[in-house]
Image (cartoon, rainbow, N blue to C red; front, side):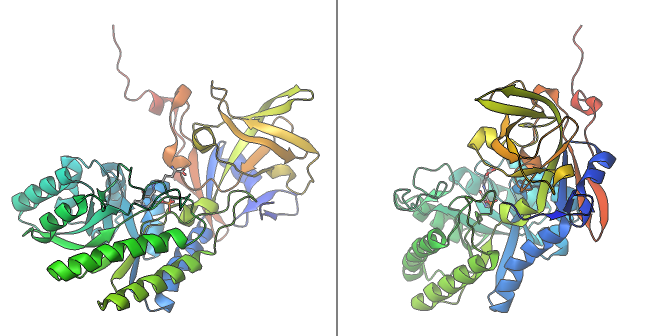
Length: 431
Ligand code: LLP
């Protein structure tokens, strides 16, 4: 079902490299990214806006996969960067990412996070709540600095009408609600603040969205609010940030739009709304995470034990699971996979892929059609590039897997495999 390449030996390839060789060289579980695919995804957004002559910033939502090497690729592709914590900001700084293109998010930013952002002169803080406005104001006064700020609003689009929307609905922990006067109150605080350079609005309606309807509806709601503030205070937004959430294909059940269509439709809609209001078209910012890295990554595992329950299920266990990919356990997320060393063989039956954690819910894929699986085979799970490594954890004290980038026929280790020493490195003895 998944498009993939097979070499003469019948092995799965990624970025022109033999995955079985990579598994041998680096061990398993192993995350591998095809850097060319990452670059193509970046360009699908950036170039579309450029071709349409629409001023835009494409900020990579680094929560999807943050590492120094990944941030460097985002930098090379001219993207901006969305960070949501001091850890992601620190990674960006370590990678030498241009500070003026870093945007800080979060619904409970600490004073330390805000100080770090302000001291490093990052490009923008997306303000989420009243406590944060106070903290930013005080810090800017203390450091005698100015800062560009966007206000995150909750557009209040009811999930009844828009089933994909989970973070943009009224009952959300994120942002200022438009319906109950919160956003109005925040607006006056931000608009009148001597140190805050209030640039515009932000909203994020959810994730893994396959059509543009929800984004356009959100843009419409934001423009209605802008019209009110424009009338009352002469407010003209310089920036409109419509968040991320552009869906990708995990299995045949998913049918996302080509990435350039999101940029095209959003660009057209914002241009149209602005001209109706007779204001200049604001710069459009978007924050794709999954759409940049999701399909560019695969995970390799070694197949270990097998268990057959005749008439019920065939289990095959791999040497990773919910520690390197939490999504199936957390969201019942679905994936496709092949046996990398038998990628040219047709499936002969179905097996369910179990992780190695002590938890029944640690199942990666249910009833996956496969050629006869054997202990020692390499299983390759597709589309694990987003929220895999970034949500990896140490459950059962399993060390985190390594990450390898492949490009132009070369492979390069970009995150080392953790050792058991790493796992206990913060433990202290108690005698
Ligand atoms: N911008 C904001 C404000 C966000 O909250 C998010 C994701 C993004 C951008 C990027 O969304 P994306 O383009 O990657 O869909 N762990 C979940 C996804 C959580 C997304 C949280 N926010 C998963 O594995 O599906």
